[in-house]
Length: 160
Length: 160
DNA sequence: ATGTCAATGAAAATCATTATCATTTAAACT
DNA sequence: AGTTTAAATGATAATGATTTTCATTGACAT
Ligand SMILES: [Mn+2]
Ligand SMILES: [Mn+2]
Ligand SMILES: [Zn+2]
Ligand SMILES: [Zn+2]
Image (tube, rainbow over the protein chains, first blue to last red):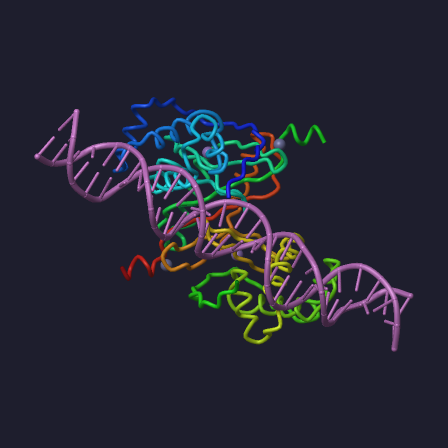
């Protein structure tokens, strides 16, 4: 069953992202070997505007306003498609529902405020290198990693 | 409903862990402000022997053999208690069920083989320091982090 | 030994996500 | 432009992990 609950819209500190037009969206869909449907284009539009890290539920609710004809199964399905094709990155924080973002050119990890939900994107080349060194030490072929930092942001620390 | 399915028992490369006796288990339970029950002692016993990183289901099934009177609600409940008291550490890999381990003295992160499920524990002081630096840069008070490396272990790479 | 309140276990509920399936539709082909 | 057909959709049911409920049991302070 589908809830329609408002999630608080918290701040994000994002790395640069270039805007994308409808034609590019269609191209992206074709590149995945999928048919171009209005639902898929609308999903990509919705993801490219507003909050970068969005849950499937939030995305469905956002879409539901302008395009009530889109079912949430389609949202989940297409998010999965895009994740498999690395067009979208799935971010899991703790045991919470997965959040999704259009994969930017630049790799990054996340710093999360456990009080207000603020998300900061960062990249640290030294950490990346050290990760490779660790994998090498144990003779692993490194294919991916998850680095999530948790803490309290400045505003939350001050306002208490 | 409760399944009784065998999960494959994969290798682990663990940091040192000192064995714990029943009296210590009881002490741990009392320190959490909880009553000492046989169920809780049995859960701690089961966790201290065998695979270090175990799911709630696996733990329940393991216990079920010797102590069929223990319900899985109790297993979940006590794991949650212990996690909140940092006696147990919850490890989440991808979208898979959470795994639990008795928190060792030494902090560590994990390197996982995505083929065979092998888990290697490691600690890297330089990465820890760099994480602090990142948090500081964004004026966050760092309270925790998740670092999981994914890859293919040597054996899996060879046997393909 | 007794009383009290926490703990337990069976079962139902919840939450996120995935699968099913009848219907619609994109797009390849006349 | 009309026909064909497999892919896509959306309503709904199903799933899997975890949590909650609630009647009963048990730990432990007195
Ligand atoms: Mn991001
Ligand atoms: Mn570990
Ligand atoms: Zn904050
Ligand atoms: Zn392996």
